[in-house]
Image 1: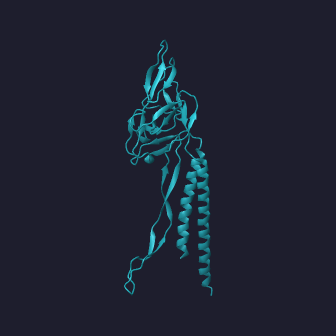
Image 2 (image 1 turned 120 degrees about the vertical axis):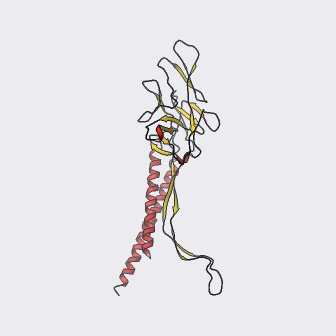
Image 3 (image 1 turned 90 degrees about the horizontal axis):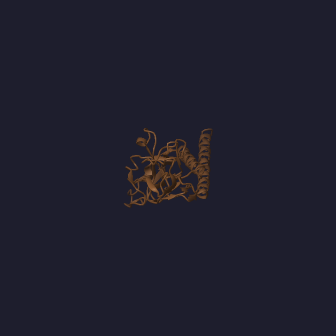
Length: 269
């Protein structure tokens, strides 16, 4: 009956509405440092089995296929795209970019990921205490902490994460800190909490820590930022596809409604 088509089309409208929301978020963050775009994965729902495949007929032959009517779709999950964004040259000593695998580690609220957040954004500041903090609305401190005293000049961050500076009264640069990176077996399982931060989840696995340039970790480039990896053209194409699919599901509802009207009118005769 057309009633099934109504419910099936409704699942499509609901899922496509969520996909449009995800695309809108991608496009809204096209200029967000270190932002990773998401895509929506769909899966079909249960099927009504009206005829079983392989049933023998009167001649003893098996039917080559059955008769199944699907009951719609739903979103199974959203999947992050962790491809590296484009490099943006800023020339700022405290702007850092990860070339390759890894996340910066910062201290966040205790009720979020045991107080540790992970980010690809490298727009760091030096706060009033001299600590390097991430340039979001909360300013979480880098972990392990790196403190640059007021009298230290000539800040340099090497590719392996060593922070060098020239203290007052000295001629040669000295190491004043070490930046570490973190990776995960399944980074797509990380939980986003906003403000350019992810936290650990059961799906991501435990964090793996190390220095830049060692093992699976990328290197650090000073004076650059990693831009958003959102491809506006691709997102706009996906938005158009979602809009057209939404319209088709709307037309399915209209066609099912017209069929029900024909059936209801039969009772008048």
